[in-house]
Amino acid sequence: MPYVEAIGRATYVFAVLEWNAVYCCERMQGGYINSLAKKTAGKVAKDLVRLVSKLPNQQDKIDCSSPAQEFKRLVVVRNRIVHGKPGTASNCDQRLFHDGTPLTPAMIDDAADEFAACSAELNTLLYNQLKLLVI
Image (tube, rainbow, N blue to C red; front, side):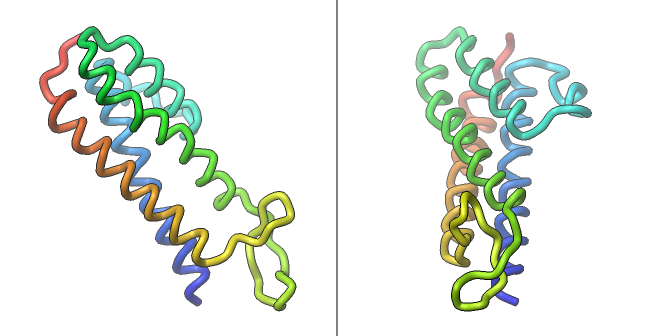
């Protein structure tokens, strides 16, 4: 089932992305990871954007802003997949739908690629700009 494999791959890659976002938040606000019990990916994204906006170094703020905003956007993409409505496409394939549009394997694979790219950016920040951050 390539379709289910695509969904699984996207879900896994997003989980890695989300944890990179969490670890970035932890670097900017020590103890952040202890507050995760009731946080959704959307809340983590809002926290990431907020913490980036408070960075004291202007260059770090510039470097981190775009990946933080991208993570926030990708939470919406992920939610469309994970919270999609199951149904039957016009060709009789079983698909997840968002707003009446069937999510194709290519669309899900493209989302997974976007998740991976953003994850790599956040991971780079984690081990570079945010590595020695003390707030």
